[in-house]
Amino acid sequence: MSTSIMSGLGSSLNTLDRIRAAQSSSIQKIATGSKYPSAADGASDYAIIQRTYSNIGAVSQSNSNAQTSNSMLSTAAGAVNETVSSLSSLRSTLLNAANGTNGSTDLTALQKSVDQTISAVNDNASVTYNGKQLLNGSQSLTVAGADGYSTVNLGNMTSQGLGLTDSEGKSTINLTDTSSLSSALEKVDSALNSALDQATSLGAAQQGLSYQSSNYTTQEEALYSTVSTQGDTDIAAESVNLASSNTQEKAALFAIKAGMQNMSQNMLGALNDHSRGAAASMLM
Image 1 (cartoon, rainbow, N blue to C red):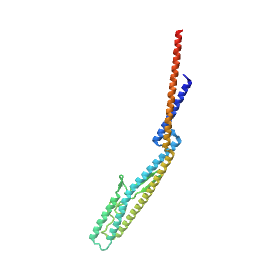
Image 2 (cartoon, rainbow, N blue to C red):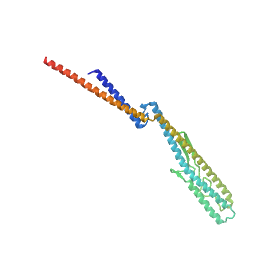
Image 3 (cartoon, rainbow, N blue to C red):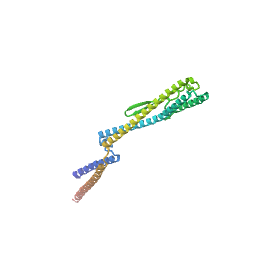
Image 4 (cartoon, rainbow, N blue to C red):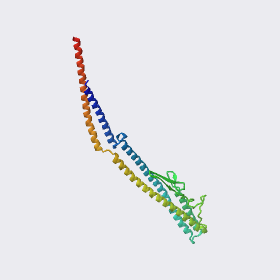
């Protein structure tokens, strides 16, 4: 068998392997949209892109954390705002009670209004989020982000925490004792200031989380832009590469087929020569 035929056939087979590897790479790049779908396509570029995707995931989760935390604070802020309204109403009730025109019946009726308002304050403080009671003094909110942690403290907005009831839950405001009205007004003013401080703190924390969320959104968009520039496949160019590989594959297959035919003919010729030699030996 001719050595040149075998050499040519082997070269054609190697060429076909390279062409099909290129085809597979083009198909994978088109399917994934990435120039570096695996480390084999460029180890350093692949590593950079994967680290960028990891950063995108961290920033995305941080943004989600900020938004969820803001939702929780919104729930707490709504309850605190209700408490501020209740305490403002309670202050007006005390000023009404301090007026010298009220009789004992009037003061009793006003006391009922006070007790109802204190009960409403406790209702506001019992607000929950995902099963957590937010305003009983037991909660603080830790917000985890890609750039670190932040903590928002939630105060005790119960009637006891605000000084409106004692440790046994009894009201510390007694309108039937007119001599204590001045002290009661001070307690309500103190409670109102505490509630306003809590509302202000929550508002500032919400504003900060909104800024964080906006920053994370901007970061995420920038990272996606970076990874797109570095790693996105030029589909049009890769489609041309694939078409070229397909054409080259056809040429390689044609060369292999021709080589196989030449090899077959060479083998048949050798067999015929051998047969003719054997026949001649028999005739001699």
